Length: 155
Image 1 (spheres, rainbow, N blue to C red):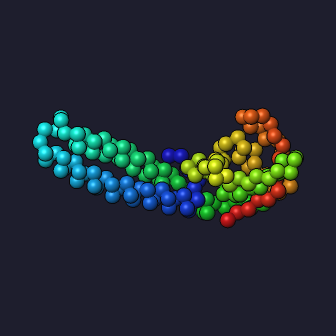
Image 2 (tube, rainbow, N blue to C red; image 1 turned 60 degrees about the vertical axis):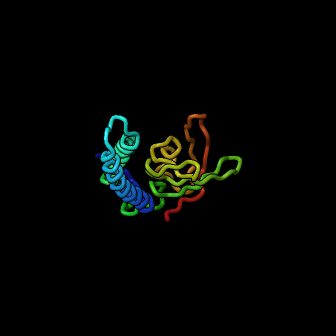
Image 3 (cartoon, rainbow, N blue to C red; image 1 turned 90 degrees about the vertical axis):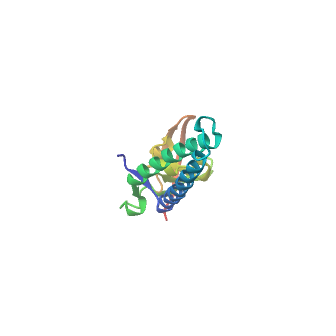
């Protein structure tokens, strides 16, 4: 089982989804029972739909349980807070003065639109281990770019 680093917030979000899916599973079981009592199952659309939905729900429950078993909370990991590590929000500056902040997260919580990037992404791999003031060149899919680490914050 692979270890996945995750924030407490991300862990709770997955736990809530799992709890909701378990409730949905119970409701689907009742629907299936009710649909089965209506007679011929080969021509029973309600039964077929409920069975298909149950299969999807069961797969998602299995996936979430596996992810949660392998989860390690970032809050529990001891890191050198002077370096950019998972869980850090790192503000970078380009030579033209533009600044961008990225939060280094596990793959499960990555959301580039929110500035959360997976520690296995090319950008994050270029940032990991850097300290404030470090200048570096990141090799990205669209080419190389230069950056300076302006600030590293842990929440």
